[in-house]
Length: 52
Image (cartoon, rainbow, N blue to C red; front, side):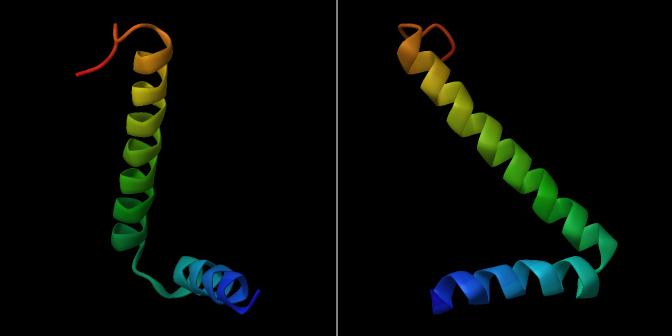
């Protein structure tokens, strides 16, 4: 529970205190990471059509 609260506090504080450029870079990295995971899932479910 404490770890979850710490993570939530870190994310909330980062939204206010990080420079906008760094925040945008973090968001972009998370978006690309999310799509990479989804792409791999789709590739497995679709017989590897989208893999690689």
